[in-house]
Image (tube, rainbow over all chains, first blue to last red; front, top):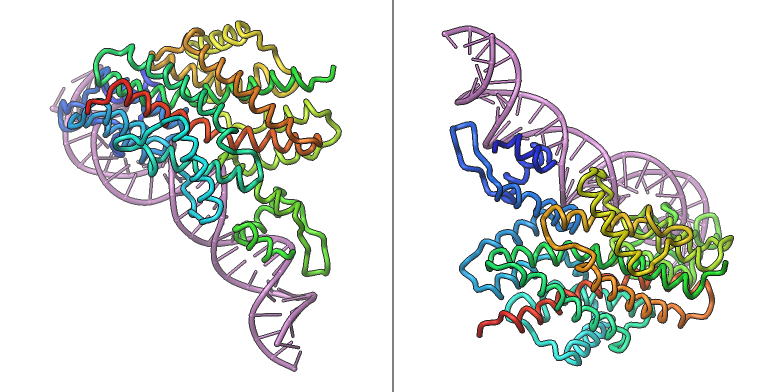
Amino acid sequence: MKLAELSEHSGVSTATIKYYLREGLLPPGRRVTATRSAYDESHLQRLRLVRALIQVGRVPVATAREVLAALEDDSLDHHHRLGIAVGALPSPPEPDPEAPAVDRARHTVDALLSRLNWLEGPHAWGPGSPAYGTLVDAVGALARLNYPCDVDDLLPYARAAAELAVTDLDLVERYESPDAQVEAAVALTVLYEPVLLSLRRIAEAQESGRRFASG
Amino acid sequence: MKLAELSEHSGVSTATIKYYLREGLLPPGRRVTATRSAYDESHLQRLRLVRALIQVGRVPVATAREVLAALEDDSLDHHHRLGIAVGALPSPPEPDPEAPAVDRARHTVDALLSRLNWLEGPHAWGPGSPAYGTLVDAVGALARLNYPCDVDDLLPYARAAAELAVTDLDLVERYESPDAQVEAAVALTVLYEPVLLSLRRIAEAQESGRRFASG
DNA sequence: CATGATTGGATAGTGACACTCTCCAATGAA
DNA sequence: TTCATTGGAGAGTGTCACTATCCAATCATG
Protein backbone atom coordinates (compact mmCIF):
# COMPACT_ATOMS: atom_id res chain seq x y z
CA MET A 1 0.00 0.00 0.00
CA LYS A 2 1.39 3.39 -0.80
CA LEU A 3 0.71 6.51 1.15
CA ALA A 4 -2.13 7.64 -1.09
CA GLU A 5 -3.83 4.27 -0.70
CA LEU A 6 -3.34 4.32 3.04
CA SER A 7 -5.05 7.70 2.94
CA GLU A 8 -7.98 6.35 0.92
CA HIS A 9 -8.48 3.30 3.11
CA SER A 10 -8.38 5.31 6.31
CA GLY A 11 -10.11 8.50 5.24
CA VAL A 12 -7.18 10.51 6.61
CA SER A 13 -5.57 13.05 4.27
CA THR A 14 -2.06 12.37 3.01
CA ALA A 15 -0.91 15.62 4.58
CA THR A 16 -2.11 14.44 7.97
CA ILE A 17 -0.52 11.02 7.53
CA LYS A 18 2.78 12.70 6.68
CA TYR A 19 2.36 14.80 9.82
CA TYR A 20 1.80 11.68 11.94
CA LEU A 21 4.85 10.06 10.39
CA ARG A 22 6.92 13.12 11.17
CA GLU A 23 5.63 13.17 14.75
CA GLY A 24 6.39 9.49 15.24
CA LEU A 25 2.78 8.46 15.79
CA LEU A 26 3.02 6.12 12.84
CA PRO A 27 6.08 3.97 12.12
CA PRO A 28 7.68 4.64 8.73
CA GLY A 29 6.76 2.34 5.88
CA ARG A 30 9.07 -0.19 4.31
CA ARG A 31 11.28 1.71 1.92
CA VAL A 32 10.82 0.35 -1.59
CA THR A 33 12.86 2.91 -3.47
CA ALA A 34 14.38 6.24 -2.52
CA THR A 35 11.09 7.98 -3.09
CA ARG A 36 8.56 5.29 -2.28
CA SER A 37 7.53 3.37 0.82
CA ALA A 38 5.05 0.57 1.33
CA TYR A 39 2.53 0.44 4.17
CA ASP A 40 0.54 -2.57 5.35
CA GLU A 41 -2.44 -3.53 7.47
CA SER A 42 -0.58 -2.77 10.68
CA HIS A 43 -0.13 0.82 9.57
CA LEU A 44 -3.82 1.08 8.80
CA GLN A 45 -4.73 -0.34 12.20
CA ARG A 46 -2.30 1.97 13.96
CA LEU A 47 -3.57 4.94 12.03
CA ARG A 48 -7.12 4.19 13.10
CA LEU A 49 -6.00 3.90 16.71
CA VAL A 50 -4.19 7.23 16.48
CA ARG A 51 -7.25 8.92 15.04
CA ALA A 52 -9.45 7.42 17.73
CA LEU A 53 -7.10 8.58 20.48
CA ILE A 54 -6.79 12.09 19.09
CA GLN A 55 -10.27 12.77 17.74
CA VAL A 56 -12.53 10.78 20.02
CA GLY A 57 -10.32 10.64 23.08
CA ARG A 58 -8.97 14.17 22.62
CA VAL A 59 -5.54 12.95 23.58
CA PRO A 60 -2.84 15.50 22.64
CA VAL A 61 -0.43 14.38 19.94
CA ALA A 62 2.56 14.42 22.27
CA THR A 63 0.72 12.23 24.78
CA ALA A 64 -0.41 9.84 22.08
CA ARG A 65 3.21 9.41 21.07
CA GLU A 66 4.15 8.37 24.62
CA VAL A 67 1.24 5.98 24.88
CA LEU A 68 2.09 4.35 21.57
CA ALA A 69 5.73 4.06 22.59
CA ALA A 70 4.69 2.25 25.76
CA LEU A 71 2.57 -0.08 23.64
CA GLU A 72 5.69 -1.26 21.89
CA ASP A 73 8.12 -1.34 24.77
CA ASP A 74 8.54 -5.06 25.32
CA SER A 75 11.15 -4.63 27.98
CA LEU A 76 8.28 -4.43 30.46
CA ASP A 77 5.88 -7.04 31.72
CA HIS A 78 2.25 -7.01 30.79
CA HIS A 79 0.86 -5.29 33.87
CA HIS A 80 3.45 -2.51 33.82
CA ARG A 81 3.15 -1.91 30.12
CA LEU A 82 -0.59 -1.61 30.54
CA GLY A 83 -0.12 0.73 33.45
CA ILE A 84 2.29 3.00 31.63
CA ALA A 85 0.21 3.14 28.50
CA VAL A 86 -3.01 3.93 30.31
CA GLY A 87 -1.29 6.06 32.95
CA ALA A 88 0.14 8.31 30.25
CA LEU A 89 -3.29 8.98 28.89
CA PRO A 90 -5.02 11.87 30.62
CA SER A 91 -4.01 15.46 30.17
CA PRO A 92 -3.93 16.55 33.77
CA PRO A 93 -4.81 20.21 34.22
CA GLU A 94 -2.54 20.08 37.29
CA PRO A 95 -2.87 23.75 38.23
CA ASP A 96 -1.22 25.38 41.21
CA PRO A 97 -1.45 23.19 44.30
CA GLU A 98 -2.68 26.06 46.44
CA ALA A 99 -2.54 24.68 49.92
CA PRO A 100 -5.94 25.13 51.56
CA ALA A 101 -8.44 23.72 49.09
CA VAL A 102 -6.21 21.16 47.44
CA ASP A 103 -4.99 19.71 50.71
CA ARG A 104 -8.51 19.03 51.83
CA ALA A 105 -9.34 17.52 48.47
CA ARG A 106 -6.29 15.28 48.64
CA HIS A 107 -7.33 14.18 52.09
CA THR A 108 -10.82 13.31 50.88
CA VAL A 109 -9.45 11.35 47.95
CA ASP A 110 -7.03 9.43 50.15
CA ALA A 111 -9.83 8.62 52.56
CA LEU A 112 -11.96 7.36 49.70
CA LEU A 113 -9.24 5.18 48.24
CA SER A 114 -8.31 3.64 51.56
CA ARG A 115 -11.97 3.05 52.38
CA LEU A 116 -12.20 1.09 49.14
CA ASN A 117 -8.97 -0.70 49.92
CA TRP A 118 -7.50 0.54 46.69
CA LEU A 119 -3.78 0.22 47.04
CA GLU A 120 -1.11 2.26 45.44
CA GLY A 121 -0.09 0.75 42.11
CA PRO A 122 3.43 -0.15 41.16
CA HIS A 123 4.37 2.39 38.56
CA ALA A 124 2.12 4.93 37.05
CA TRP A 125 -0.71 4.86 39.57
CA GLY A 126 -1.30 5.95 43.07
CA PRO A 127 -0.54 9.47 44.31
CA GLY A 128 1.33 11.32 41.62
CA SER A 129 -0.38 9.56 38.74
CA PRO A 130 -2.33 11.69 36.29
CA ALA A 131 -5.63 10.11 37.27
CA TYR A 132 -4.98 10.79 40.94
CA GLY A 133 -4.04 14.39 40.20
CA THR A 134 -7.09 14.93 38.06
CA LEU A 135 -9.29 13.48 40.76
CA VAL A 136 -7.82 15.77 43.40
CA ASP A 137 -8.29 18.78 41.13
CA ALA A 138 -11.90 17.93 40.39
CA VAL A 139 -12.73 17.35 44.05
CA GLY A 140 -10.97 20.60 44.88
CA ALA A 141 -13.07 22.46 42.33
CA LEU A 142 -16.25 20.95 43.75
CA ALA A 143 -15.23 21.92 47.26
CA ARG A 144 -14.38 25.48 46.25
CA LEU A 145 -17.88 25.81 44.82
CA ASN A 146 -19.40 24.35 47.97
CA TYR A 147 -20.80 21.38 46.11
CA PRO A 148 -21.02 18.06 47.94
CA CYS A 149 -17.86 16.01 47.56
CA ASP A 150 -17.37 14.11 50.80
CA VAL A 151 -16.21 10.55 50.82
CA ASP A 152 -19.84 9.50 51.07
CA ASP A 153 -20.77 11.56 48.05
CA LEU A 154 -17.93 10.09 46.02
CA LEU A 155 -18.52 6.50 47.00
CA PRO A 156 -21.31 5.78 44.51
CA TYR A 157 -19.07 6.98 41.69
CA ALA A 158 -16.19 4.86 42.92
CA ARG A 159 -18.42 1.80 43.14
CA ALA A 160 -19.66 2.38 39.63
CA ALA A 161 -16.05 2.80 38.49
CA ALA A 162 -15.09 -0.46 40.16
CA GLU A 163 -17.87 -2.33 38.37
CA LEU A 164 -16.95 -0.78 35.06
CA ALA A 165 -13.31 -1.69 35.56
CA VAL A 166 -14.32 -5.33 35.85
CA THR A 167 -16.31 -5.00 32.64
CA ASP A 168 -13.37 -3.27 30.94
CA LEU A 169 -10.85 -5.88 31.94
CA ASP A 170 -13.23 -8.62 30.85
CA LEU A 171 -13.26 -7.02 27.43
CA VAL A 172 -9.47 -6.77 27.45
CA GLU A 173 -9.12 -10.42 28.37
CA ARG A 174 -11.07 -11.42 25.28
CA TYR A 175 -7.85 -10.76 23.40
CA GLU A 176 -5.24 -13.41 23.39
CA SER A 177 -1.82 -11.94 22.79
CA PRO A 178 -0.38 -9.56 25.38
CA ASP A 179 0.21 -7.00 22.65
CA ALA A 180 -3.41 -7.06 21.58
CA GLN A 181 -4.48 -6.81 25.22
CA VAL A 182 -2.38 -3.72 25.85
CA GLU A 183 -3.62 -2.06 22.70
CA ALA A 184 -7.19 -3.00 23.58
CA ALA A 185 -6.77 -1.60 27.07
CA VAL A 186 -5.68 1.76 25.67
CA ALA A 187 -8.37 1.88 23.03
CA LEU A 188 -11.16 0.74 25.31
CA THR A 189 -10.12 3.03 28.14
CA VAL A 190 -10.18 6.04 25.85
CA LEU A 191 -13.07 5.15 23.57
CA TYR A 192 -15.45 4.12 26.33
CA GLU A 193 -14.97 7.44 28.09
CA PRO A 194 -17.25 9.40 25.74
CA VAL A 195 -19.64 6.43 25.79
CA LEU A 196 -19.87 6.59 29.54
CA LEU A 197 -20.20 10.36 29.72
CA SER A 198 -22.84 10.48 26.98
CA LEU A 199 -24.84 7.76 28.64
CA ARG A 200 -24.66 9.62 31.92
CA ARG A 201 -26.00 12.77 30.28
CA ILE A 202 -28.80 10.84 28.61
CA ALA A 203 -29.59 9.01 31.83
CA GLU A 204 -29.66 12.32 33.69
CA ALA A 205 -32.15 13.60 31.18
CA GLN A 206 -34.29 10.52 31.72
CA GLU A 207 -34.12 10.86 35.47
CA SER A 208 -34.76 14.57 35.35
CA GLY A 209 -37.82 13.96 33.20
CA ARG A 210 -39.04 11.33 35.62
CA ARG A 211 -38.72 13.72 38.55
CA PHE A 212 -39.44 17.17 37.18
CA ALA A 213 -41.37 16.89 33.93
CA SER A 214 -44.52 18.94 34.07
CA GLY A 215 -46.69 17.96 31.10
CA MET B 1 -15.64 44.69 45.85
CA LYS B 2 -13.66 46.21 43.03
CA LEU B 3 -12.22 44.27 40.15
CA ALA B 4 -8.80 43.95 41.73
CA GLU B 5 -10.34 42.50 44.87
CA LEU B 6 -12.52 40.11 42.88
CA SER B 7 -9.29 38.99 41.27
CA GLU B 8 -7.59 38.44 44.62
CA HIS B 9 -10.50 36.53 46.12
CA SER B 10 -10.84 34.26 43.11
CA GLY B 11 -7.23 33.83 42.09
CA VAL B 12 -8.15 34.84 38.55
CA SER B 13 -6.11 37.63 36.94
CA THR B 14 -7.77 40.98 36.31
CA ALA B 15 -7.01 40.61 32.61
CA THR B 16 -8.92 37.34 32.50
CA ILE B 17 -11.84 38.77 34.48
CA LYS B 18 -12.03 41.66 32.03
CA TYR B 19 -12.02 39.10 29.23
CA TYR B 20 -14.91 37.19 30.82
CA LEU B 21 -16.84 40.45 31.27
CA ARG B 22 -16.28 41.28 27.62
CA GLU B 23 -17.39 37.81 26.58
CA GLY B 24 -20.53 37.97 28.69
CA LEU B 25 -19.58 35.10 30.97
CA LEU B 26 -19.76 37.41 33.95
CA PRO B 27 -22.47 40.06 34.37
CA PRO B 28 -21.11 43.62 34.64
CA GLY B 29 -20.66 45.06 38.11
CA ARG B 30 -22.76 47.83 39.60
CA ARG B 31 -21.42 51.09 38.21
CA VAL B 32 -20.27 53.33 41.07
CA THR B 33 -18.59 56.07 39.05
CA ALA B 34 -17.65 56.41 35.43
CA THR B 35 -14.43 54.52 36.01
CA ARG B 36 -15.34 52.20 38.85
CA SER B 37 -17.72 49.27 39.33
CA ALA B 38 -18.59 47.18 42.36
CA TYR B 39 -18.83 43.39 42.38
CA ASP B 40 -20.43 41.19 45.02
CA GLU B 41 -20.57 37.60 46.21
CA SER B 42 -22.72 36.56 43.27
CA HIS B 43 -19.96 37.63 40.90
CA LEU B 44 -17.44 35.64 42.87
CA GLN B 45 -19.67 32.55 42.78
CA ARG B 46 -20.32 32.93 39.08
CA LEU B 47 -16.64 33.45 38.40
CA ARG B 48 -15.82 30.23 40.20
CA LEU B 49 -18.48 28.39 38.20
CA VAL B 50 -17.06 29.79 34.96
CA ARG B 51 -13.56 28.70 35.87
CA ALA B 52 -14.80 25.25 36.83
CA LEU B 53 -16.65 24.87 33.54
CA ILE B 54 -13.72 26.09 31.46
CA GLN B 55 -10.74 24.67 33.31
CA VAL B 56 -12.06 21.47 34.84
CA GLY B 57 -14.88 20.77 32.43
CA ARG B 58 -12.96 22.01 29.37
CA VAL B 59 -16.09 23.70 28.13
CA PRO B 60 -15.34 26.23 25.37
CA VAL B 61 -16.00 29.85 26.24
CA ALA B 62 -18.76 30.20 23.65
CA THR B 63 -20.52 27.12 25.03
CA ALA B 64 -20.16 28.32 28.59
CA ARG B 65 -21.87 31.56 27.59
CA GLU B 66 -24.87 29.63 26.25
CA VAL B 67 -25.06 27.44 29.32
CA LEU B 68 -24.95 30.43 31.63
CA ALA B 69 -27.60 32.20 29.57
CA ALA B 70 -29.89 29.17 29.93
CA LEU B 71 -29.26 29.26 33.68
CA GLU B 72 -30.83 32.69 33.82
CA ASP B 73 -33.65 32.26 31.34
CA ASP B 74 -36.68 32.16 33.60
CA SER B 75 -39.14 32.02 30.74
CA LEU B 76 -38.72 28.23 30.85
CA ASP B 77 -39.84 25.64 33.33
CA HIS B 78 -37.42 23.84 35.54
CA HIS B 79 -37.07 20.64 33.55
CA HIS B 80 -36.51 22.42 30.25
CA ARG B 81 -34.09 24.92 31.69
CA LEU B 82 -32.10 22.06 33.13
CA GLY B 83 -32.21 20.24 29.83
CA ILE B 84 -31.04 23.22 27.83
CA ALA B 85 -28.27 24.06 30.23
CA VAL B 86 -26.94 20.53 30.42
CA GLY B 87 -27.72 19.78 26.77
CA ALA B 88 -25.59 22.71 25.67
CA LEU B 89 -22.61 21.35 27.53
CA PRO B 90 -20.59 18.91 25.47
CA SER B 91 -18.49 19.88 22.51
CA PRO B 92 -19.54 17.23 20.05
CA PRO B 93 -16.80 16.29 17.60
CA GLU B 94 -19.62 15.56 15.14
CA PRO B 95 -17.37 14.63 12.21
CA ASP B 96 -18.62 13.50 8.83
CA PRO B 97 -21.57 11.15 9.15
CA GLU B 98 -20.06 8.73 6.64
CA ALA B 99 -22.84 6.31 5.97
CA PRO B 100 -21.57 2.78 6.57
CA ALA B 101 -19.99 2.86 10.00
CA VAL B 102 -22.07 5.63 11.51
CA ASP B 103 -25.35 4.11 10.44
CA ARG B 104 -24.55 0.87 12.19
CA ALA B 105 -23.44 2.77 15.28
CA ARG B 106 -26.66 4.76 15.29
CA HIS B 107 -28.61 1.54 15.03
CA THR B 108 -26.76 0.05 17.98
CA VAL B 109 -27.35 3.14 20.06
CA ASP B 110 -31.04 3.21 19.24
CA ALA B 111 -31.34 -0.47 20.13
CA LEU B 112 -29.62 0.20 23.44
CA LEU B 113 -31.83 3.13 24.33
CA SER B 114 -35.03 1.36 23.45
CA ARG B 115 -33.93 -1.73 25.34
CA LEU B 116 -33.53 0.49 28.37
CA ASN B 117 -36.84 2.15 27.70
CA TRP B 118 -35.13 5.51 27.55
CA LEU B 119 -37.50 7.80 25.75
CA GLU B 120 -36.72 10.78 23.67
CA GLY B 121 -36.60 13.92 25.81
CA PRO B 122 -38.62 17.02 25.15
CA HIS B 123 -36.06 19.54 24.05
CA ALA B 124 -32.37 19.09 23.98
CA TRP B 125 -32.18 15.32 24.30
CA GLY B 126 -32.89 12.35 22.18
CA PRO B 127 -31.51 11.88 18.66
CA GLY B 128 -29.84 15.09 17.60
CA SER B 129 -28.71 16.08 21.07
CA PRO B 130 -24.99 16.52 21.63
CA ALA B 131 -24.83 13.55 23.99
CA TYR B 132 -26.55 11.30 21.48
CA GLY B 133 -24.22 12.44 18.70
CA THR B 134 -21.16 11.92 20.85
CA LEU B 135 -22.36 8.46 21.77
CA VAL B 136 -22.89 7.51 18.12
CA ASP B 137 -19.43 8.82 17.23
CA ALA B 138 -17.75 6.89 20.00
CA VAL B 139 -19.54 3.66 19.15
CA GLY B 140 -18.67 4.20 15.50
CA ALA B 141 -15.00 4.62 16.38
CA LEU B 142 -15.06 1.44 18.44
CA ALA B 143 -16.72 -0.45 15.60
CA ARG B 144 -14.21 0.84 13.05
CA LEU B 145 -11.42 -0.50 15.22
CA ASN B 146 -13.20 -3.83 15.61
CA TYR B 147 -13.56 -3.42 19.33
CA PRO B 148 -16.64 -4.84 21.02
CA CYS B 149 -19.51 -2.39 21.10
CA ASP B 150 -22.71 -4.40 20.74
CA VAL B 151 -25.75 -3.58 22.75
CA ASP B 152 -24.69 -6.23 25.22
CA ASP B 153 -21.26 -4.68 25.59
CA LEU B 154 -22.76 -1.24 26.14
CA LEU B 155 -25.41 -2.35 28.62
CA PRO B 156 -23.15 -2.40 31.70
CA TYR B 157 -22.10 1.18 30.98
CA ALA B 158 -25.70 2.24 30.52
CA ARG B 159 -26.71 0.60 33.77
CA ALA B 160 -23.89 2.34 35.60
CA ALA B 161 -24.94 5.61 34.00
CA ALA B 162 -28.52 5.09 35.12
CA GLU B 163 -27.42 4.52 38.71
CA LEU B 164 -25.17 7.56 38.62
CA ALA B 165 -27.98 9.69 37.24
CA VAL B 166 -30.07 8.82 40.27
CA THR B 167 -27.16 9.81 42.51
CA ASP B 168 -26.68 13.03 40.56
CA LEU B 169 -30.30 14.05 40.73
CA ASP B 170 -30.36 13.25 44.44
CA LEU B 171 -27.52 15.70 44.88
CA VAL B 172 -29.37 18.28 42.78
CA GLU B 173 -32.50 17.89 44.85
CA ARG B 174 -30.60 18.82 47.98
CA TYR B 175 -30.91 22.39 46.76
CA GLU B 176 -34.10 24.22 47.41
CA SER B 177 -34.58 26.97 44.89
CA PRO B 178 -35.04 26.03 41.24
CA ASP B 179 -32.23 28.42 40.33
CA ALA B 180 -29.82 26.71 42.68
CA GLN B 181 -30.92 23.32 41.34
CA VAL B 182 -30.25 24.27 37.75
CA GLU B 183 -26.86 25.70 38.60
CA ALA B 184 -26.05 22.64 40.66
CA ALA B 185 -27.10 20.36 37.81
CA VAL B 186 -24.69 22.10 35.47
CA ALA B 187 -21.84 22.19 37.95
CA LEU B 188 -22.29 18.62 39.12
CA THR B 189 -22.70 17.25 35.61
CA VAL B 190 -19.46 18.85 34.52
CA LEU B 191 -17.40 18.54 37.66
CA TYR B 192 -18.22 14.92 38.35
CA GLU B 193 -17.09 13.92 34.86
CA PRO B 194 -13.37 14.05 35.66
CA VAL B 195 -14.15 12.43 39.01
CA LEU B 196 -15.82 9.51 37.29
CA LEU B 197 -13.16 9.12 34.63
CA SER B 198 -10.30 9.32 37.12
CA LEU B 199 -11.94 6.77 39.36
CA ARG B 200 -12.43 4.47 36.40
CA ARG B 201 -8.75 4.72 35.52
CA ILE B 202 -7.73 4.04 39.10
CA ALA B 203 -10.19 1.17 39.37
CA GLU B 204 -8.84 -0.27 36.14
CA ALA B 205 -5.36 -0.15 37.60
CA GLN B 206 -6.61 -1.98 40.68
CA GLU B 207 -8.37 -4.60 38.63
CA SER B 208 -5.42 -4.97 36.29
CA GLY B 209 -3.14 -5.49 39.28
CA ARG B 210 -5.52 -8.06 40.69
CA ARG B 211 -5.52 -10.00 37.42
CA PHE B 212 -2.09 -9.51 35.93
CA ALA B 213 0.37 -8.45 38.62
CA SER B 214 3.37 -10.70 38.65
CA GLY B 215 5.29 -9.98 41.86
C1' DC C 1 12.99 7.62 -24.22
C1' DA C 2 10.35 11.73 -23.26
C1' DT C 3 7.19 13.75 -20.19
C1' DG C 4 3.97 14.74 -16.89
C1' DA C 5 2.25 13.09 -12.45
C1' DT C 6 3.41 11.31 -7.85
C1' DT C 7 6.20 10.55 -3.82
C1' DG C 8 8.68 11.52 0.47
C1' DG C 9 10.69 15.13 2.86
C1' DA C 10 11.18 19.81 4.65
C1' DT C 11 9.38 24.39 5.81
C1' DA C 12 6.15 27.62 6.52
C1' DG C 13 1.40 29.03 7.07
C1' DT C 14 -3.57 28.62 8.99
C1' DG C 15 -7.44 28.95 12.08
C1' DA C 16 -9.29 28.27 16.47
C1' DC C 17 -8.93 29.29 21.14
C1' DA C 18 -8.02 31.26 25.67
C1' DC C 19 -6.09 34.34 27.29
C1' DT C 20 -2.68 38.55 27.96
C1' DC C 21 -0.61 42.95 26.84
C1' DT C 22 -0.68 47.76 25.81
C1' DC C 23 -2.94 52.09 25.70
C1' DC C 24 -5.86 55.59 27.22
C1' DA C 25 -8.55 59.07 29.56
C1' DA C 26 -10.94 59.43 33.91
C1' DT C 27 -10.36 59.05 38.65
C1' DG C 28 -8.99 58.34 43.50
C1' DA C 29 -5.60 58.69 47.27
C1' DA C 30 -1.63 61.12 49.52
C1' DT D 1 -1.26 68.74 42.99
C1' DT D 2 0.44 64.66 41.49
C1' DC D 3 0.90 60.15 40.42
C1' DA D 4 -0.69 55.43 40.61
C1' DT D 5 -4.96 52.85 39.55
C1' DT D 6 -9.24 51.74 37.17
C1' DG D 7 -12.33 50.17 33.50
C1' DG D 8 -12.60 49.68 28.75
C1' DA D 9 -11.11 48.46 24.03
C1' DG D 10 -8.11 46.47 20.56
C1' DA D 11 -4.30 44.07 19.23
C1' DG D 12 -0.94 40.59 20.29
C1' DT D 13 0.69 35.85 22.12
C1' DG D 14 1.34 30.94 22.55
C1' DT D 15 -0.35 26.49 21.65
C1' DC D 16 -2.08 23.02 18.90
C1' DA D 17 -3.45 20.15 15.11
C1' DC D 18 -3.23 20.28 11.08
C1' DT D 19 -2.60 22.07 5.97
C1' DA D 20 -0.39 24.15 2.04
C1' DT D 21 3.62 24.87 -0.68
C1' DC D 22 8.07 23.55 -2.57
C1' DC D 23 11.41 20.53 -4.24
C1' DA D 24 14.18 17.05 -6.41
C1' DA D 25 13.88 12.18 -7.27
C1' DT D 26 11.37 8.84 -9.48
C1' DC D 27 7.58 6.19 -11.66
C1' DA D 28 4.21 5.21 -15.24
C1' DT D 29 2.73 5.98 -19.89
C1' DG D 30 2.82 6.65 -24.59
